[in-house]
Length: 580
Image 1: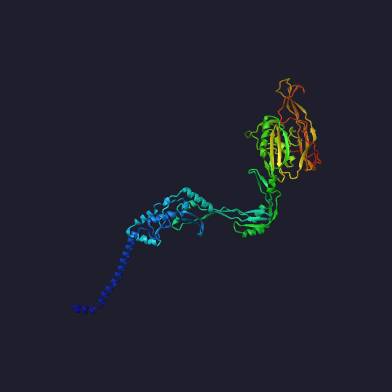
Image 2: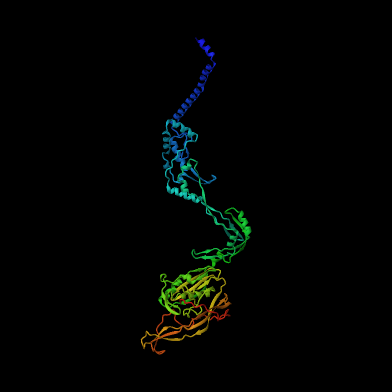
């Protein structure tokens, strides 16, 4: 029977080939199955191996520290030893390092990370059997995420580090500037500053950077610097030569400032080619100041340039006003070229500021006003300035002749009205010094008298206008009542003052007309009862006046001017109601 079947098969070739193909197709499948089985067995073995390890998988990192192959105890020791010293680097947009600090600088301590190694080892062990093998492979190849645990840091230490780094990375803008030194001018080109972004927010979660090598990229904001063109620098430096001066606020000397002239086009070209912040040294024509800081230090307020002294009388209010106004200007300093204003310096005379009511002239009448009497201070100061040979900028004579100072040497002032001003026309600072003692006001001008010159003042009465007596009937007076003096009289005078300047040897350098003072006449006014006859029974009662009227000039040193530089008939200052 077998031969028959074989013969049949031989007579059917298609059937035979099909059976042979089936047998041959089972081979690759068998091989693949065997390979898969081997791989599964190997992976299972790897999972078993990974699960049996008492050490961390190779290439395992915790907070950026490699603990691969270490036991839990060894890994914990490494963490505590290395983590706080781990360097953190701040880098710019080109990965260039800008600053470096440590994890410990952020306020972390070893206690913060106690038990971290055990925690991550337990995390590895908690994975399923087949997951352990995958975790092992991923860790070895660097594809498994590192462990990261960052507790709260010490905020005080963190803030201190943030402040230090912010200050370290910040750059203040460098404004363009120019300075003169020797025979050269130094010009600095502007350089913008910068401030880093908020480092507190950037470093609050350091885990973002522990996985990438502790490199923290930061950005900056630009702080623009003030730029100056060569022309602007020239305008600033040229013609600004200044002598050394005095700063009252700090009681110190302000150094001198030379002036400079240079080629603007050449300097601009040099600036265009300079790097930001670069300082250029260029040739220039230098104008040196006349007074240096060293010069001024040796002679500051060394000399009494001029001194005036007047007797203070009148009511307690008037005396108090003189003393108060003198105290206000005491110690005031004017540098060379500066102008003093009495009204601006003393300020508004108010009761709140301590000024008292006292007699003053208002539209020719004598009335009590707050601050009455302060004209004695301005007048004494005026005379001291004359004797100091300072430039008188603004001065007005009183309406009537004063009794406390030589005629022509007074200076009336009023808030909102006339002012007294003088300018320091010397090369050195001057200081006003006042003193009230035993009924006398003394005003000194301190400064530097380099030539030893001194001044004398004289005056000349050009004309005299006698006062008249005027009788007025007063219906309020009872018939037969004695006459009453309502207004005390002043004789009118026109007075010229002269200034004579002497050198240190007493030789006249200059003598000239200084000012004209036109003191008005004020008639005597007597009140009479109805139907009274002029001059009958006049009762002289004391009148409240700012100063005692006098027809006798206050004595002056009899200095006769060599040759007045102006005509005695020069116009007088405008008549403005003023305080005495």
